[in-house]
Each structure stands twice: as structure tokens, then as C-alpha cells.
Picture 1 (cartoon, one colour):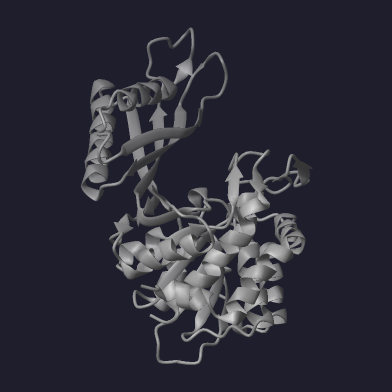
Picture 2: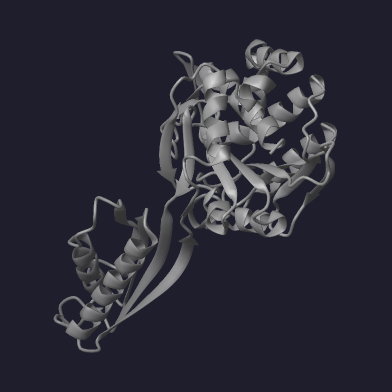
Length: 389
């Protein structure tokens, strides 16, 4: 029996758009590089947001605007306004600080550059999709809101997508776009809790005050105990100390020390238990130091978990769309993406990718654009199908 995706893919205008993605690969790459060349660190996405807003308006989207956190919105009108909208989003921020050399190089078919895949390709994908829908007069049934959002990476804590979720609610369908991850579908979101541990002690001179409590030594003890925690493989649960700092000099007993702690799990209860274990370790070290050390544990990030069943209509559409662009097998992944927010709300949401990539969050990050036409094709088919639901 022909699927909804097959019926959409058989339409002549859709066939023309799918062929266009293959024929215009060079221009698509130029669009990706144009986005990548605009620095967009988390909390400093304004320049890239201005570029996207300008492009949204030039492409004829309606109601183009930026919200208080610098998310950029634009509406592609459907012809059945009573239907719940489809939200197609891609995060604008990268992990690279302002001043990073964004030079792009090419080797063996790959295109290298900081942020090229994560997520310049995703943002460019929104623009390329809108262009194709305009060029081939592909009007969806429901309104489609294209959103370039902020704050997905690191300490951004999904703040951009939180605002998107508040705006559109759980009745919308959400298609979250990543530049890499072609052939993969995420319909499950892991929970993430992040904490800053600040340790304070009296400190002193390394010789004259030897034996007084050191904030660094106390923090090291905490980290050692965390590193010894048994965590389940199923549901997968992890911990990581991402940064550490403190002290004054080599011959000073440290008065302060700090670290950032990342805790994750596929299961909400397992994550809560891990947090409790860390809190217990902190309390234990404070007791052992007999009041000479004070540890403050401050939550700095909370990415909620959520999921929809693999049998959900939106997941099935994503799988069928992959098959329609000659990717016979979908790989299902569990991750921490902007999809965490709508999934935690109980909304229909999936995260999909546009092409193959590697070395994410490294200066030598790359994309292999060979699969980009298929990735764009999958996203187009999925969008049109979701707008009929």
C-alpha cells in the first residue's frame, strides 16, 4: 500500500524540487558557507539572527520577527489555517567563541570549518527549503513556521527552544533540524542536569599553613568520589566534569575552586538518583572537613527528558521520508537536542539531519555534502506530510 510520503513524493512539483536539490548542490554549499562565516557563539547569535531575518523577508515569509531572546520566526502560509502548525527549527549558535578563525577548506570531498555542520548546515537548510517551496509552488496544508533559534549549545540550556515551545504549545508538530545526522531519527530525549560546584576554604601559605583545608584538595576529593559512582548501563546514565579551576599560585593553599558537572540519563528517575548521590558526596566531604570547607552546588542547566513512541505517526513519516530518498534503513538515536523541549511537553517532535558530518565541536569539523540533496529531500517530504496531519 502506498504511504502518505509516497503519494506526496509522486507529485510532479515535488519530484521537480527533489531533482533541484541534486542539481543545485553547489549553490546549497555556498549558502551553508555564507551562514558559517557569521560568528554565532551561544549568547551572541545576534549577527547570524539578523542575516536569517533578512533572508526570511527576502524569501517572502510572513510575520517575520525576532523575539526577546533573538529567535527568528517566519511563517510560510498554508491553505487550511485551522490546522495546527508545523514548526521547523534549527539552532543558530555554535560552541566556538568570538574571534575563532572560520576559514573553510576542502579535502577529499569534505568541507571543513568550525560550526560548518553544527549547525550552519541546519540553518542553511531552512533557507534552501523555503527557496524550493517558493520555486516549485509547494504550498502546505497547514501553516509552517520556520524558526532559527538561539541557545542550544552548552550553557544556553535550550533557552531559545523553550521560548518556541511556549509560543506554539504542544498542539504543533516540531521538526528539529541538525546539519549532520543524516539517516538518523531522534524521537527520544535524554535528561541533562548541570551544576557548578563552588568550594571555599580558609587556605593559606603552602609551608606556613600546611594542613589547613584547601578548596582544590576538597574539590579533588569530590571529583574522585563522583568518578567512583556506579551508574547503570541500562538506562544509560553518565557523569562528566567539563571544566575545573581555582587557586592563586603554586605555593598557596587554595581558598576557592570550581568545576562544571554534567549529569545525563535516558531515565528521569535514574538521573534524579544520580543527582542525589552527588549531593550526598558534597555533604560527606563537608562533614569530613569539619566545617573548614563550604561547597555550593548550583544548578546551571536542566534539559528535560521526553519521548514519543517509535510507532507515532510523525516518526513513521520521518522513516518513510528517508526511504523515499533512497536511505532504506533509519538509525534511531537518543540525544540531547532542541527536541527535548517539545518532547518533554508531550508534543509530536523528531530531530532529523541533513547530511553526513564529523569532528563536531572541533576546529576541524566537517561535512560531506554528498547526502545533502537526500537530506533536504527527506525534510521537504516530512514537512509536507506533517502539514497534512
